[in-house]
Length: 415
Image 1 (cartoon, rainbow, N blue to C red):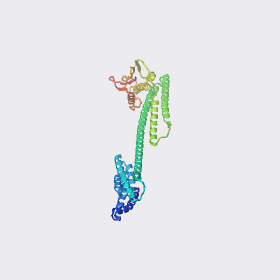
Image 2 (image 1 turned 60 degrees about the horizontal axis):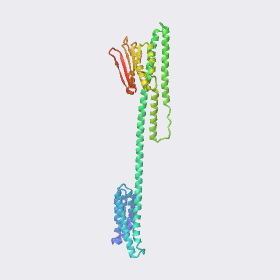
Image 3 (image 1 turned 90 degrees about the vertical axis):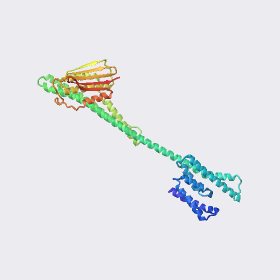
Image 4 (image 1 turned 45 degrees about the horizontal axis):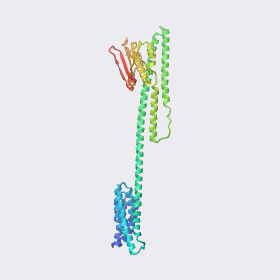
Protein backbone atom coordinates (compact mmCIF):
# COMPACT_ATOMS: atom_id res chain seq x y z
CA UNK A 1 0.00 0.00 0.00
CA UNK A 2 2.89 2.35 0.69
CA UNK A 3 4.37 1.73 -2.76
CA UNK A 4 0.99 2.27 -4.43
CA UNK A 5 0.45 5.55 -2.58
CA UNK A 6 3.96 6.76 -3.43
CA UNK A 7 3.48 5.79 -7.07
CA UNK A 8 0.14 7.64 -7.16
CA UNK A 9 1.71 10.81 -5.73
CA UNK A 10 4.67 10.50 -8.12
CA UNK A 11 2.34 10.02 -11.10
CA UNK A 12 0.33 13.14 -10.18
CA UNK A 13 3.54 15.12 -9.73
CA UNK A 14 4.96 14.00 -13.07
CA UNK A 15 1.59 14.55 -14.77
CA UNK A 16 1.48 18.13 -13.48
CA UNK A 17 5.10 18.69 -14.54
CA UNK A 18 4.26 17.28 -17.98
CA UNK A 19 2.22 20.39 -18.83
CA UNK A 20 5.18 22.85 -18.97
CA UNK A 21 7.29 20.10 -20.52
CA UNK A 22 4.74 19.73 -23.35
CA UNK A 23 4.71 23.48 -23.92
CA UNK A 24 8.50 23.71 -24.09
CA UNK A 25 8.72 20.65 -26.34
CA UNK A 26 5.91 21.81 -28.64
CA UNK A 27 3.75 18.73 -28.20
CA UNK A 28 0.09 18.50 -27.13
CA UNK A 29 -0.47 18.95 -23.43
CA UNK A 30 -2.33 15.64 -23.19
CA UNK A 31 0.77 13.86 -24.47
CA UNK A 32 2.91 15.51 -21.82
CA UNK A 33 0.43 14.64 -19.08
CA UNK A 34 0.15 10.99 -20.17
CA UNK A 35 3.93 10.74 -20.40
CA UNK A 36 4.26 12.15 -16.89
CA UNK A 37 1.63 9.80 -15.48
CA UNK A 38 3.34 6.76 -17.02
CA UNK A 39 6.81 7.81 -15.89
CA UNK A 40 5.71 8.61 -12.34
CA UNK A 41 3.85 5.33 -11.91
CA UNK A 42 7.14 3.42 -12.34
CA UNK A 43 7.80 4.13 -8.66
CA UNK A 44 5.46 1.25 -7.74
CA UNK A 45 8.27 -1.13 -8.78
CA UNK A 46 10.87 0.39 -6.45
CA UNK A 47 11.26 -2.69 -4.20
CA UNK A 48 11.54 -5.20 -7.03
CA UNK A 49 13.57 -3.17 -9.55
CA UNK A 50 15.16 -0.18 -7.80
CA UNK A 51 17.78 0.19 -10.52
CA UNK A 52 15.08 0.63 -13.18
CA UNK A 53 13.30 3.28 -11.08
CA UNK A 54 16.54 5.29 -10.66
CA UNK A 55 17.32 5.02 -14.38
CA UNK A 56 13.85 6.29 -15.28
CA UNK A 57 14.25 9.15 -12.80
CA UNK A 58 17.63 10.08 -14.33
CA UNK A 59 16.15 9.85 -17.84
CA UNK A 60 13.29 12.31 -17.13
CA UNK A 61 15.49 14.74 -15.14
CA UNK A 62 16.04 17.00 -18.24
CA UNK A 63 12.25 17.42 -18.44
CA UNK A 64 12.25 18.59 -14.81
CA UNK A 65 10.08 15.67 -13.79
CA UNK A 66 10.24 12.93 -11.13
CA UNK A 67 11.82 14.71 -8.17
CA UNK A 68 9.90 12.51 -5.72
CA UNK A 69 10.65 9.41 -7.79
CA UNK A 70 14.35 10.27 -7.82
CA UNK A 71 14.55 10.80 -4.07
CA UNK A 72 12.57 7.67 -3.18
CA UNK A 73 14.34 5.61 -5.84
CA UNK A 74 17.81 6.56 -4.53
CA UNK A 75 16.75 5.75 -0.96
CA UNK A 76 15.41 2.34 -1.98
CA UNK A 77 18.51 1.66 -4.08
CA UNK A 78 20.89 2.47 -1.19
CA UNK A 79 18.89 0.38 1.29
CA UNK A 80 18.73 -2.65 -1.03
CA UNK A 81 21.12 -5.61 -0.98
CA UNK A 82 23.16 -4.43 -3.97
CA UNK A 83 26.90 -4.00 -4.51
CA UNK A 84 28.25 -0.66 -3.38
CA UNK A 85 29.74 0.05 -6.81
CA UNK A 86 26.31 -0.21 -8.43
CA UNK A 87 24.80 2.14 -5.82
CA UNK A 88 27.69 4.59 -6.28
CA UNK A 89 27.45 4.55 -10.05
CA UNK A 90 23.70 5.21 -10.15
CA UNK A 91 23.94 7.87 -7.41
CA UNK A 92 26.72 9.53 -9.40
CA UNK A 93 24.60 9.49 -12.56
CA UNK A 94 21.70 11.10 -10.69
CA UNK A 95 24.03 13.70 -9.14
CA UNK A 96 25.59 14.64 -12.49
CA UNK A 97 22.24 14.71 -14.25
CA UNK A 98 20.66 16.95 -11.60
CA UNK A 99 23.77 19.17 -11.60
CA UNK A 100 23.69 19.69 -15.37
CA UNK A 101 19.96 20.30 -15.58
CA UNK A 102 20.02 22.74 -12.64
CA UNK A 103 23.01 24.56 -14.11
CA UNK A 104 21.33 24.96 -17.50
CA UNK A 105 17.97 26.06 -16.05
CA UNK A 106 19.50 28.63 -13.69
CA UNK A 107 21.69 29.95 -16.49
CA UNK A 108 18.67 30.36 -18.77
CA UNK A 109 16.75 32.20 -16.04
CA UNK A 110 19.69 34.51 -15.42
CA UNK A 111 20.05 35.21 -19.14
CA UNK A 112 16.37 36.12 -19.37
CA UNK A 113 16.85 38.49 -16.48
CA UNK A 114 14.61 36.67 -14.06
CA UNK A 115 17.45 36.56 -11.51
CA UNK A 116 19.95 39.43 -11.07
CA UNK A 117 22.36 37.65 -8.69
CA UNK A 118 26.11 37.45 -9.27
CA UNK A 119 28.00 34.79 -11.19
CA UNK A 120 28.73 32.91 -7.94
CA UNK A 121 25.10 31.91 -7.61
CA UNK A 122 25.09 29.72 -10.72
CA UNK A 123 27.54 27.01 -9.51
CA UNK A 124 26.27 27.34 -5.95
CA UNK A 125 22.67 26.69 -6.96
CA UNK A 126 23.63 23.77 -9.22
CA UNK A 127 25.83 22.06 -6.62
CA UNK A 128 23.46 22.67 -3.68
CA UNK A 129 20.42 21.43 -5.61
CA UNK A 130 22.15 18.29 -6.91
CA UNK A 131 23.61 17.42 -3.52
CA UNK A 132 20.34 18.17 -1.75
CA UNK A 133 18.39 15.82 -4.02
CA UNK A 134 21.02 13.04 -4.06
CA UNK A 135 23.07 12.87 -0.85
CA UNK A 136 20.32 12.74 1.86
CA UNK A 137 18.32 9.83 0.36
CA UNK A 138 21.51 7.87 -0.40
CA UNK A 139 22.94 8.33 3.09
CA UNK A 140 19.61 7.55 4.74
CA UNK A 141 19.21 4.43 2.59
CA UNK A 142 22.73 3.24 3.45
CA UNK A 143 22.01 3.71 7.17
CA UNK A 144 18.66 1.91 7.02
CA UNK A 145 20.17 -0.93 4.97
CA UNK A 146 23.08 -1.35 7.39
CA UNK A 147 20.70 -1.30 10.37
CA UNK A 148 18.43 -3.85 8.69
CA UNK A 149 21.39 -6.14 8.01
CA UNK A 150 22.55 -5.73 11.60
CA UNK A 151 19.13 -6.67 12.93
CA UNK A 152 18.97 -9.69 10.65
CA UNK A 153 22.43 -10.73 11.80
CA UNK A 154 21.41 -10.37 15.45
CA UNK A 155 18.23 -12.33 14.79
CA UNK A 156 20.17 -15.11 13.08
CA UNK A 157 22.63 -15.15 15.95
CA UNK A 158 19.80 -15.36 18.45
CA UNK A 159 18.25 -18.23 16.48
CA UNK A 160 21.62 -19.96 16.35
CA UNK A 161 22.09 -19.55 20.10
CA UNK A 162 18.60 -20.90 20.69
CA UNK A 163 19.37 -23.93 18.54
CA UNK A 164 22.65 -24.46 20.41
CA UNK A 165 20.86 -24.22 23.75
CA UNK A 166 18.27 -26.68 22.52
CA UNK A 167 21.05 -29.04 21.45
CA UNK A 168 22.76 -28.62 24.81
CA UNK A 169 19.48 -29.35 26.55
CA UNK A 170 19.01 -32.51 24.50
CA UNK A 171 22.56 -33.64 25.21
CA UNK A 172 22.17 -32.86 28.90
CA UNK A 173 18.95 -34.87 28.95
CA UNK A 174 20.74 -37.74 27.25
CA UNK A 175 23.53 -37.57 29.82
CA UNK A 176 20.97 -37.47 32.62
CA UNK A 177 19.18 -40.49 31.18
CA UNK A 178 22.50 -42.31 30.84
CA UNK A 179 23.37 -41.44 34.44
CA UNK A 180 19.99 -42.67 35.63
CA UNK A 181 20.43 -45.94 33.76
CA UNK A 182 23.91 -46.35 35.22
CA UNK A 183 22.54 -45.59 38.66
CA UNK A 184 19.76 -48.17 38.31
CA UNK A 185 22.25 -50.78 37.08
CA UNK A 186 24.67 -50.04 39.93
CA UNK A 187 21.93 -50.14 42.56
CA UNK A 188 20.64 -53.40 41.11
CA UNK A 189 24.11 -54.91 41.43
CA UNK A 190 24.46 -53.66 44.99
CA UNK A 191 21.06 -55.01 45.95
CA UNK A 192 21.87 -58.34 44.36
CA UNK A 193 25.22 -58.59 46.13
CA UNK A 194 23.82 -57.72 49.54
CA UNK A 195 20.58 -59.66 49.38
CA UNK A 196 21.80 -62.71 47.49
CA UNK A 197 24.83 -63.40 49.67
CA UNK A 198 23.29 -62.66 53.05
CA UNK A 199 20.02 -64.39 52.33
CA UNK A 200 21.76 -67.41 50.82
CA UNK A 201 23.78 -67.85 54.02
CA UNK A 202 20.63 -67.36 56.07
CA UNK A 203 18.87 -70.10 54.09
CA UNK A 204 21.83 -72.44 54.56
CA UNK A 205 21.93 -71.78 58.30
CA UNK A 206 18.16 -72.15 58.54
CA UNK A 207 18.38 -75.55 56.88
CA UNK A 208 21.15 -76.57 59.26
CA UNK A 209 19.12 -75.23 62.16
CA UNK A 210 16.16 -77.32 61.08
CA UNK A 211 18.34 -80.41 60.83
CA UNK A 212 20.03 -80.12 64.24
CA UNK A 213 17.29 -78.44 66.25
CA UNK A 214 16.40 -81.63 68.13
CA UNK A 215 19.74 -83.45 68.04
CA UNK A 216 22.08 -80.62 69.07
CA UNK A 217 20.28 -77.69 70.72
CA UNK A 218 23.53 -75.79 71.36
CA UNK A 219 24.49 -75.88 67.71
CA UNK A 220 20.96 -74.85 66.81
CA UNK A 221 21.32 -71.82 69.08
CA UNK A 222 24.60 -70.88 67.41
CA UNK A 223 23.04 -71.21 63.95
CA UNK A 224 20.08 -69.10 65.02
CA UNK A 225 22.47 -66.43 66.30
CA UNK A 226 24.32 -66.46 62.98
CA UNK A 227 21.07 -66.13 61.07
CA UNK A 228 20.13 -63.14 63.22
CA UNK A 229 23.53 -61.49 62.72
CA UNK A 230 23.40 -61.94 58.97
CA UNK A 231 19.86 -60.61 58.80
CA UNK A 232 20.87 -57.53 60.78
CA UNK A 233 23.88 -56.96 58.52
CA UNK A 234 21.70 -57.25 55.43
CA UNK A 235 19.18 -54.78 56.87
CA UNK A 236 21.96 -52.35 57.78
CA UNK A 237 23.39 -52.37 54.26
CA UNK A 238 19.92 -52.02 52.72
CA UNK A 239 19.15 -49.04 54.99
CA UNK A 240 22.40 -47.37 53.95
CA UNK A 241 21.54 -47.72 50.25
CA UNK A 242 17.98 -46.50 50.77
CA UNK A 243 19.32 -43.53 52.71
CA UNK A 244 21.59 -42.65 49.79
CA UNK A 245 18.66 -42.87 47.38
CA UNK A 246 16.49 -40.64 49.55
CA UNK A 247 19.23 -38.03 49.93
CA UNK A 248 19.84 -37.98 46.17
CA UNK A 249 16.19 -37.06 45.56
CA UNK A 250 16.49 -33.71 47.35
CA UNK A 251 15.89 -30.71 45.05
CA UNK A 252 18.98 -29.01 43.69
CA UNK A 253 19.14 -25.26 44.30
CA UNK A 254 19.44 -23.06 41.26
CA UNK A 255 20.76 -19.56 40.88
CA UNK A 256 19.70 -16.98 38.31
CA UNK A 257 16.62 -18.08 36.30
CA UNK A 258 17.47 -19.05 32.74
CA UNK A 259 15.45 -18.95 29.54
CA UNK A 260 13.11 -21.83 28.80
CA UNK A 261 15.68 -23.79 26.83
CA UNK A 262 18.52 -22.91 29.17
CA UNK A 263 16.45 -23.98 32.15
CA UNK A 264 15.81 -27.35 30.56
CA UNK A 265 19.54 -27.81 30.01
CA UNK A 266 20.32 -26.78 33.59
CA UNK A 267 17.66 -29.08 35.00
CA UNK A 268 18.90 -32.03 32.95
CA UNK A 269 22.49 -31.31 33.97
CA UNK A 270 21.51 -31.11 37.63
CA UNK A 271 19.68 -34.43 37.37
CA UNK A 272 22.81 -35.96 35.85
CA UNK A 273 24.93 -34.58 38.71
CA UNK A 274 22.48 -35.92 41.32
CA UNK A 275 22.45 -39.33 39.65
CA UNK A 276 26.24 -39.36 39.52
CA UNK A 277 26.44 -38.42 43.19
CA UNK A 278 24.04 -41.21 44.07
CA UNK A 279 26.07 -43.72 42.08
CA UNK A 280 29.27 -42.60 43.79
CA UNK A 281 27.67 -42.80 47.20
CA UNK A 282 26.19 -46.24 46.60
CA UNK A 283 29.59 -47.41 45.39
CA UNK A 284 30.98 -47.07 48.95
CA UNK A 285 31.06 -50.50 50.53
CA UNK A 286 33.26 -53.20 52.07
CA UNK A 287 36.82 -53.70 50.90
CA UNK A 288 39.61 -56.26 50.98
CA UNK A 289 40.01 -55.93 54.74
CA UNK A 290 36.62 -57.63 55.15
CA UNK A 291 37.56 -60.74 53.14
CA UNK A 292 38.50 -62.80 56.20
CA UNK A 293 35.15 -62.00 57.83
CA UNK A 294 33.36 -62.92 54.59
CA UNK A 295 35.16 -66.27 54.38
CA UNK A 296 34.50 -66.87 58.07
CA UNK A 297 30.76 -66.47 57.46
CA UNK A 298 30.90 -69.05 54.68
CA UNK A 299 32.92 -71.40 56.88
CA UNK A 300 30.34 -70.98 59.62
CA UNK A 301 27.69 -72.07 57.14
CA UNK A 302 29.50 -75.37 56.60
CA UNK A 303 31.66 -74.54 53.58
CA UNK A 304 35.27 -75.74 53.59
CA UNK A 305 37.10 -72.69 52.27
CA UNK A 306 40.72 -71.59 52.44
CA UNK A 307 42.24 -68.19 51.67
CA UNK A 308 45.73 -67.63 50.25
CA UNK A 309 47.23 -64.17 49.70
CA UNK A 310 50.25 -63.53 47.48
CA UNK A 311 52.31 -60.39 47.40
CA UNK A 312 52.40 -57.45 49.77
CA UNK A 313 48.99 -56.06 50.60
CA UNK A 314 48.54 -52.33 50.09
CA UNK A 315 45.72 -49.83 49.89
CA UNK A 316 43.74 -49.45 46.67
CA UNK A 317 41.12 -47.00 45.46
CA UNK A 318 37.71 -47.68 47.08
CA UNK A 319 36.11 -48.82 43.83
CA UNK A 320 38.89 -51.37 43.24
CA UNK A 321 38.66 -52.80 46.75
CA UNK A 322 34.89 -53.00 46.65
CA UNK A 323 34.90 -54.70 43.24
CA UNK A 324 37.42 -57.28 44.42
CA UNK A 325 35.33 -57.93 47.51
CA UNK A 326 32.10 -58.27 45.53
CA UNK A 327 33.68 -60.73 43.09
CA UNK A 328 34.74 -63.01 45.93
CA UNK A 329 31.40 -62.56 47.68
CA UNK A 330 29.33 -63.42 44.60
CA UNK A 331 31.56 -66.40 43.78
CA UNK A 332 31.06 -67.80 47.31
CA UNK A 333 27.32 -67.19 47.01
CA UNK A 334 27.26 -69.22 43.81
CA UNK A 335 29.09 -72.05 45.57
CA UNK A 336 26.42 -72.04 48.30
CA UNK A 337 23.71 -72.14 45.65
CA UNK A 338 25.07 -74.60 43.12
CA UNK A 339 27.80 -76.65 44.87
CA UNK A 340 26.88 -76.95 48.52
CA UNK A 341 29.55 -78.81 50.50
CA UNK A 342 32.27 -78.36 47.86
CA UNK A 343 35.71 -77.34 49.04
CA UNK A 344 36.57 -73.85 47.82
CA UNK A 345 39.90 -72.08 47.32
CA UNK A 346 40.13 -68.29 47.37
CA UNK A 347 43.35 -66.75 46.05
CA UNK A 348 44.25 -63.05 46.07
CA UNK A 349 47.44 -61.79 44.43
CA UNK A 350 48.84 -58.27 44.92
CA UNK A 351 50.94 -57.43 41.87
CA UNK A 352 52.80 -54.34 40.78
CA UNK A 353 50.05 -52.59 38.87
CA UNK A 354 47.08 -54.88 39.37
CA UNK A 355 45.23 -57.08 41.78
CA UNK A 356 44.03 -60.57 40.84
CA UNK A 357 41.55 -62.81 42.58
CA UNK A 358 40.38 -66.34 41.87
CA UNK A 359 37.63 -68.42 43.50
CA UNK A 360 37.60 -72.10 42.53
CA UNK A 361 35.46 -74.82 44.01
CA UNK A 362 35.96 -78.55 43.70
CA UNK A 363 33.12 -80.84 42.60
CA UNK A 364 30.46 -81.13 45.31
CA UNK A 365 30.21 -84.44 47.15
CA UNK A 366 26.68 -84.84 45.82
CA UNK A 367 25.27 -83.21 42.68
CA UNK A 368 23.06 -80.33 43.78
CA UNK A 369 21.31 -77.43 42.23
CA UNK A 370 20.01 -74.11 43.37
CA UNK A 371 16.45 -75.31 42.97
CA UNK A 372 17.09 -78.36 45.12
CA UNK A 373 18.55 -76.18 47.87
CA UNK A 374 15.58 -73.87 47.72
CA UNK A 375 17.72 -70.93 46.53
CA UNK A 376 16.40 -69.11 43.46
CA UNK A 377 18.92 -68.07 40.83
CA UNK A 378 18.31 -65.25 38.37
CA UNK A 379 21.55 -65.66 36.44
CA UNK A 380 22.63 -62.06 37.16
CA UNK A 381 25.56 -62.79 39.46
CA UNK A 382 28.19 -63.52 36.81
CA UNK A 383 26.88 -60.68 34.65
CA UNK A 384 27.17 -58.22 37.52
CA UNK A 385 30.70 -59.36 38.37
CA UNK A 386 31.82 -58.97 34.78
CA UNK A 387 30.26 -55.51 34.51
CA UNK A 388 32.05 -54.37 37.67
CA UNK A 389 35.45 -55.59 36.51
CA UNK A 390 35.13 -54.34 32.92
CA UNK A 391 34.10 -50.86 34.12
CA UNK A 392 37.47 -50.58 35.84
CA UNK A 393 39.34 -51.78 32.74
CA UNK A 394 39.94 -55.28 34.04
CA UNK A 395 39.49 -58.82 32.72
CA UNK A 396 36.91 -61.31 33.97
CA UNK A 397 36.80 -65.03 33.13
CA UNK A 398 34.49 -67.71 34.51
CA UNK A 399 33.68 -71.27 33.61
CA UNK A 400 33.77 -74.95 34.66
CA UNK A 401 37.04 -76.69 35.41
CA UNK A 402 38.24 -79.98 34.01
CA UNK A 403 37.78 -81.60 37.41
CA UNK A 404 34.08 -80.74 37.44
CA UNK A 405 34.18 -77.65 39.60
CA UNK A 406 33.82 -73.98 38.73
CA UNK A 407 36.36 -71.18 38.57
CA UNK A 408 35.91 -67.39 38.67
CA UNK A 409 38.97 -65.26 37.88
CA UNK A 410 39.33 -61.46 37.70
CA UNK A 411 42.25 -59.09 37.20
CA UNK A 412 41.75 -55.39 37.99
CA UNK A 413 44.34 -52.73 37.14
CA UNK A 414 45.39 -50.81 40.23
CA UNK A 415 48.26 -48.42 39.43
